[in-house]
Length: 495
Ligand code: SF4
Ligand code: SF4
Image (cartoon, rainbow, N blue to C red; front, side, top):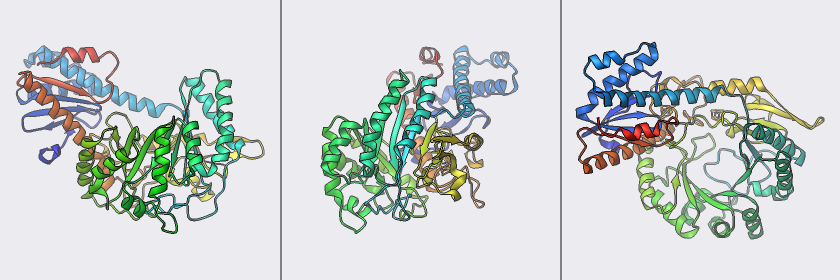
């Protein structure tokens, strides 16, 4: 891995503005969230100095331009430093603005709880326990209107997601009744486009698999890999194997009109088999994309990760990516987006659970329970047939999500990371732990660092090929820069 011979990315000046610096053997890196810059050792000192002065001028509102000219810094270096710092400030502003916006849901998450035939070894929802109830069509229709209104106001596409602590297809008849309601509501709001998504465990009849493919835009099928893995990690509750029926569902879905993604959960037992899992899924099912997700370390899960497993996960993920013939993703690595916790209200998602609750936490996605009220942000009133949302609680959760835990304040990955969620909860930190630590933090940091270093080494090789490695200034955008700066950046190739 690139990071085996690499020192850390550290803040260049202050944790207040996200710009990080690191040294490789032949070159140096500046990293501003979503932008990787590579510069030769010969030019690095002066570029770093210029960036530090400009960051100081941003923090103190004192212009440092003359100081840089007096110090003999060339114009191209000053220009490059200005652009880099501007991008860092732009990202910081974007993150702040996102937290300041009100709750304006774009996604309706319908969290079913009607039934699951499996006993997955790492299940966080633990659906085996307790009674199970379903939704009424009225609840779903009312929630749809709420989200649709917000999408209409903000000119957004609405997403309707069928998920839950059980198999949504156990509610196929209800969902079939709901889809025309969704369509009708969309037409009442004129221009709102709708996309539907369902996560399924694949334990469904072939008729239902055809129905699913014909009626849902994107299907996420859970399949953990070759039969020995699938049958060990995702058996029926009586221990019977499931791989055959899930494969059959996968074949039907892959041939049908919906887009199929396969999600494989990786556990400490299968950590080194990621390439084999990807090969199996693409050969046997042929989905449009694959996700490899490490199992959560929850109380119910038998998958207990240790900190040292994180580098191994990244190493084997990269190996799997090398042989993948379709896009391969993992939610532990998001350098292409600005992210934080999975809290639904932070992600502009209205998530409803049976029993009338609106939850903000995917770990509390079962039937509404009053003792979990800290995570509930609304209730359905069965008399008035309306949802009432607790706007104070929603704002409080959104505010909490915008505060970095102490150990994340200086981390280069803090804008692309779940900040420890779900192992560490920002909404209810435990008394013993004030910051994320351990496997999940490590794996997110290592994975993003590997992607940044991969981009940096590719840039450096390219600069060497072009013969400009002494004076180079190369950049790889992992997410869009500030509007209007792309062409300015492109003009700057040598310092
Ligand atoms: S959880 Fe870990 S990787 Fe994520 S921002 Fe915090 S310190 Fe960085
Ligand atoms: S931060 Fe806490 S409340 Fe939010 S999704 Fe994660 S575990 Fe749930």
